[in-house]
View 1 (cartoon, rainbow, N blue to C red):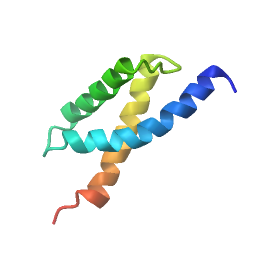
View 2: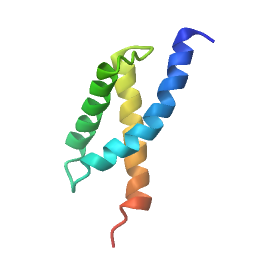
View 3: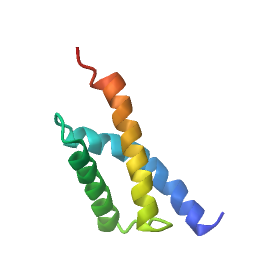
View 4: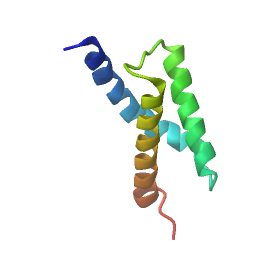
Length: 84
């Protein structure tokens, strides 16, 4: 296994567990794009704090985070934060 593959294999489970928690912590009515940016800032600052190197460009990581955040928020909206 290449080093980049091993890093990605380690990184994805961390994101899977950490993103829902972070999304829940910044949740408030409305303000979707600002909340998404807050989540990305938290994730990127934790990567920096713990010396996690993403095996690719920051643009790719941001694209992955955008998609993952949208997916988790859609799931939460449908199943967790249902209103009415």
